[in-house]
Amino acid sequence: MSARCDKTRLFKASFSFWGVLFLAVLASSLLSACADRPLSESVLSGETMGTTYSVKYINQPGEAHSARTEEEVAANVARLLTHLDKLLSTYQQDSELNQLNRAEVGVDVPVSSILWQVLLIADQTYRDSNGAFDPSVGPLVDLWGFGPTAAPDNVPPDAVIESLLIDTGFKHLDFEPNKQAVVKRSDIRLDLSAVAKGYAADRVAELLFDMGLQRFMVEVGGELRLAGTNGRNQPWRIAIEVPELLRGGVQEVVVATDVGVATSGDYRNYFERDGVRYSHTIDPRTGRPIRHNLASATVIAGSAAQADALATAFMVLGTEQSLALANRNEIAVYLISRGPDGWNTSLSKSFETYLQR
Ligand code: FAD
Image 1 (spheres, helix red, strand yellow):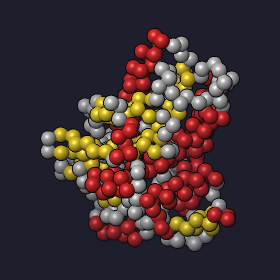
Image 2 (cartoon, protein in one colour):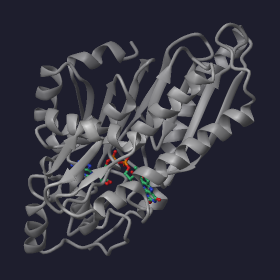
Image 3 (cartoon, protein in one colour):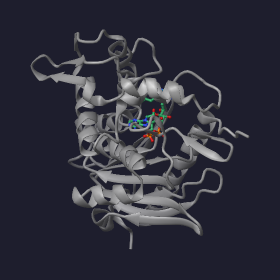
Image 4 (tube, helix red, strand yellow):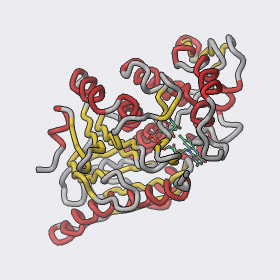
């Protein structure tokens, strides 16, 4: 029996749910703020990268005041996200990433500074996570039906998985800094879905800073970049949702600012076959979706891109290995796993400071 979640609808639905969750938590703090201070708060939103984005910013008159109109801010943000989509998408045939994916093995491929930066962040997380985060899983993501081409719920034959594993491994991509070029040493195909949305949130944050704004929450497909204080002059309050699509709810509330926050989970993009859940996070060591009981990983890091990539890495590693890696490297991670009596939560030492107590 297979009960596939309608990925796009559920993803968007859960995403809009997730978005509502953020806004609900945020609105509650802002509403009580209205009582004690006038707010010039602006909210803009739209669609990008197959998901949605929103920006909430406080444009308070004073030294950190942007003279830009809301229309100008919204237009600049939309233009930037369209540009990033064009470079980093596996869903647009002529994107820069897909041109790299079609490039010959062994040939220098000069890349834009944006793709170069994202590939460097990916390489760092690939090394830090001992290969758990690995964008070269692209062909495997497609094989399991989680990529751009729709595919039926199917468990691919072992032989096909093994054949794709031969070319999997971010180590097959060489970097040539003096030429800002990369060289594929085998026929790898990259999928940056697990880092590019976080990177987009960081780039939007930089754009807002350049326009004189310093107090905002940027969110792209659930990945967040926070700056300054909210309308009550306090750090932003972010809800971590219970990793369950239909019932959901708030599992924990964190208080943070001037960081990136990202969550990865196995409860939005998945299908079930004979009682087994196959989610969109692929273990690069096996070529198969993860099979442990970790349902979601939330990471708080210096940038949204780093948080985004690390959250996926932890979803591959599972609870024990994630906590060991996070505590060794002082990474703030919050994990929710399935237990016999419901949800179990665990967090790294660095995460404690963000808990709202
Ligand atoms: P995360 O949990 O952050 O990462 C999981 C995703 O990363 C998987 O879906 C897979 O793609 C990849 N992945 C799986 N395992 C690994 C691993 N071990 N290491 C590294 N990566 C892994 N979707 C659409 O439906 N239509 C679009 O037009 C579209 N355009 C996009 C354009 C861009 C630039 C990007 C980045 C994504 C686009 N997407 C599109 C995909 C969509 O936005 C989400 O990225 C996708 O659904 C997963 O989001 P997530 O946050 O749940 O993934």
